[in-house]
Each structure stands twice: as structure tokens, then as C-alpha cells.
Length: 476
Ligand code: AMP
Image (tube, rainbow, N blue to C red):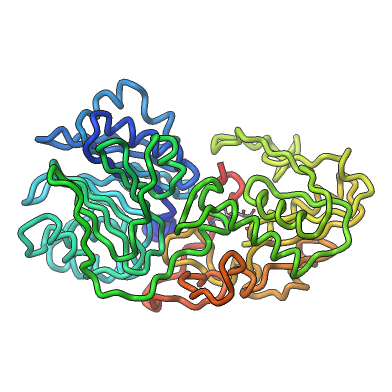
């Protein structure tokens, strides 16, 4: 596999920024810990000591990377941090963020959640004019654009650089005396502003604010640039306004259910979508069971609406990590059982509705159906709480190529046969918005379900083949 290509398109990540707190690095650590679900490949924190930036990055999970002595070394009252997703086997420290550079204006740290759609052409242009890149990440393009920008102040340079890129970004920048946070004009990826006493913080999701004991202030608005310094907080809207396109898949799968994302609690959205799923496609059954954890709130909503008992028929091992060693063939293939186990005591002779958030390649559903049948279910009805995933994401969610998306080339009936269920139903495109009043404006990107891309992506290669083959492993 081409390693350049393989380091793109998996920028599902988490970012944090802290300014004005004596334990800035510690707060950043807490935020990254709460945001571990957004990225498990690598993690990093950069703090500002006032006269210099100090950084630590590592591969693996937040709690393993940041030992107490490392946090102590990250002195200063401002910090930024990042968790990187990357489901691909090849884990590269050079792509870990925050990136730190020295440019004419001083030291600068950058952390990015999202994906730029024109990074390749911008990079080629920059290389032609002499820029030398150290990583494969699209974030580095922004750094080079900042280095070349004409503006006097850092914020002017950042704005000039960002006005040249297209795509999704929720970004934080740290200089020795400033924190800058920016969200792209469509607001694909989430970013929220909070306060811990006098300190300002920005984080990807509010579950991080809870752990930091921070107060939720508001969403950083699409297209907004926040500058935090000794002079306080300044809000700028430097880009021409466009209709927002927040990522609906954050609601479906990606964000933590206890987070407030795009000003709604994710749990409530998922539960309402589960209710809608039951309104659209309920079936005679004895019990409803979720695929944990992603299907839990949706299955609850489904069960409430359909009036069918809710049971935890699949139990999840929460400690499955990336280091699980598959036994040799002579033992047996563990497959999905490593992560999930069915309860025969609940299933025997029962007509079971099983609810998951999404069906991507179909391999997970296929294994779950087999597992439920082996546990004695007399009927297995698969209900998916989102529409068929038909097209890849170019704005920061890790999806496989179009060919690997089962729904891009198979009808629902063909997919049902493939996964072996008695019935299969998805949420309708209309039903996906059941969490808001019918007359409310649709301000979301749902390209993965509709192929309607809010930013044209013709100049972008398809995501590389592959990495959802271990989607289950990735969902730590
Ligand atoms: P699949 O076997 O490819 O159909 O995978 C579907 C499962 O992967 C569902 O249980 C989803 O919860 C999960 N999933 C969906 N999208 C993603 C993603 N971008 N990253 C990791 N897991 C995902």
C-alpha cells in the first residue's frame, strides 16, 4: 500500500486548547483522555513556557503516553493537544500532532481535526516554490502557508493561510503568547468553547469540558477565529459566510453520547433516531438488543417506540486493544467474538431485533447475525440507525473506498442476503433529521449517505482501500 496515500483521509481526531491556567498541560491531558474515542493512534501536548514551546508526542493511548513526569515537564499556562485516529497498521510518529515548527515569527504549535480537500495540489505548489515537508499530513500545508503569509500578526498569517485552503478543519494554534482556534466556514468538525475559572479552553466535544471541570460557553461558530492572549478573548469572522454543513455522522456514530455537539446532546439525538427507525420499520419481535456501544441509545429509542423489551443480548469486552494477538488457525478464528459475546439465555427461541448505528462494509453485521443465530435466536432483524453509507467522506471521517461500501453497489435485499438476516432496514434520508423539527433548515453534511458533497472533491483521490477491516478493533 502506498504509504503517502495511507496517511490521508483518517483525520478523525480530537483537539484541545487551554490558555491562562497554571496547569494547562494537565487540563489538556484530561481533555485528551476524555476524547480518546476520537483517536487512538497517537497523542501529543505542546505547552508554552512564555519564552518557548515544550512538546511531547507519542504513539498509543493518552494514559500510556503521558506519565506524571512528562506532564510536569510541560510547564506553562497555555497548551494545545491532539489525539490522532489512523486505523492503518503503520503508525508514524512523524504524523503525530501537534506539529511544532520554528518560523520567522517564532515557535508555533498546530493541531488539526478534519481533512483539507486541496492539500495535494497546494503541497505540490509549495514544493515547487521550495517548501520541504516533514510529514504526510495536510496540516503541514497550513504551516507552510502561514510561513509564507504577508500579514504582520500571527492571527493575520493564520487567516491568510486558512483562506487559501478548502475542506474541513477545527484547528488550534499555539505561539509563546497566544492561543488561536479556528473552525472552517462550513463547520464540518465540532469545536466548543469553555471556561475554567479565568482560563479559556476549546475542545472537540463537551465530554472533555466535564472532565476538566470547565463550564460550557458555546460552540465555536463555523468560520470563526478565536484569539486568546493576555488581552483576553477576541472573536473574528474573517471568511465570507457560507451555509454551515456540520457532520451528521458525528451524531450517528463518532461523538460520545454524553457530549453536546452542534448544540444538541448526542445521546438524545441517537435515541430520537432510534424512535424514528421504529416508526419507519418496526417488526414483530420478542426483544431488541443493541450492538454495544455505538447502537445503545438508538436501540433504547427503538424499543421505547416499538414497545418491545430491551435486553443487552450482546456483551462487549471493553479491554480489547490493538495488541490482541490472533491465535494461529489451529486454535480457531476469533473474529468478532473477541469484542462481543452473545447471551444464549436471552436469545434462545426469540425473535430478535438488533440495532447498530451504521453499516459500512457489512462484515460486522454479518458476524453479529451469525453469532445471534448460534446463540439460538429464531429470527434476526437487523436495524441500522442511519441511511445506507454509499460514498466516502473527504472531510475527516474514516471511510473505506466506494467499492468497499456494500451499499454503494448492492440493494438492501442483496445486503440482507449477504449479512444473513431475516430482515434488514435502514433509517430513511428524511428520518435522519428526526432530531429536529421538520421545518428546520438542514445545516448538515450527509455526503456519506447522499453523495451530495458540499465542497467539490473532484481533485481528491479516493480514500485508500482498507482500514475498516478492523473497525471493531478501532472502536476502543
Ligand atoms: P462494517 O463491518 O464495515 O459494516 O462496520 C460497521 C461497524 O463499524 C458499525 O458497528 C459501526 O459502529 C462502525 N463504524 C462505522 N463507521 C466507522 C468509522 N468511521 N470508524 C470506525 N468504526 C466505524
